[in-house]
Image 1 (cartoon, rainbow, N blue to C red):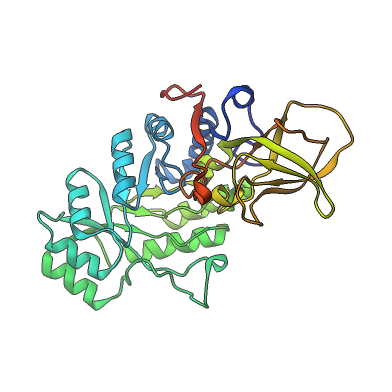
Image 2 (cartoon, helix red, strand yellow):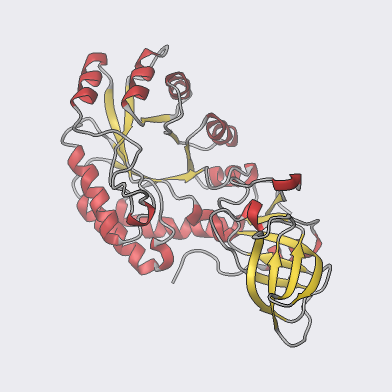
Length: 373
């Protein structure tokens, strides 16, 4: 049981038949449905604030559509901040280790919720012209087990809430901490969600002026089973019972990954002694599929024939440029189109450009915010 679409809708398939390729199609109606379902699941938390993580996708029609749904933004760079602001998203939470004190002060003056990531950043912020009187703090927490590298247990991001230097700096400037923020990779299980909420709740005793708790993002694995996700939110709600705080959440991939589709045309299809039939597409898996391995969900035109294994190779000269392996389909031909799912997050935003083939065009399908087909 999931809250995200599992197959392209009719509007996506109609667009995929006629659009010049390669192209990334984003189904805005699917995004709306996912946002609505997520809000239903989060009802036990009162009225939590959703902040879309812009690192997943900065496509302006998408951001305008999310703004129309009342979804805010999580930004980690000046470019992401400008994209959220220009799309009318509100509120916008800003945190990131590369932001200067001047960056954060400027964004705060324009209404951003700024969360400090480290002590040096805090020092720089307090030295900036017209620093904010109220800030948030990103707290250093253990990283998810799947994200640990080189034996590191604690995240490299955030501050230690018990640091004497942190409290000295805050006292010396009179800066008030009104928000606490954690993000440590995929939450994954109800137990991890419960522990993160408990850690934040405990820290409110150290920072009694806190009015907002931001649990970050990383909910995609959790939503492999919607019942388990609902259990997680119920545990979080129980852990925060009685606390006078607003909850903020930062979904990214969950909202858009399966609402996005890559459409490619095949440049050639050749027999290969090791690979079966090797089809070369007009896009590159190496350039586009950095964090995922989408699968083929549609083929155009449909035709019969005995299914055979195919390797769908990318357009570059890199030996391991592959869009999909061992795809069993009736024999493909030059000029056929394929539609891949799971291309709505971390595809365009992380795209490389080996050989200068360029990025696929991005097109919004459905919705009412403009930019659709």
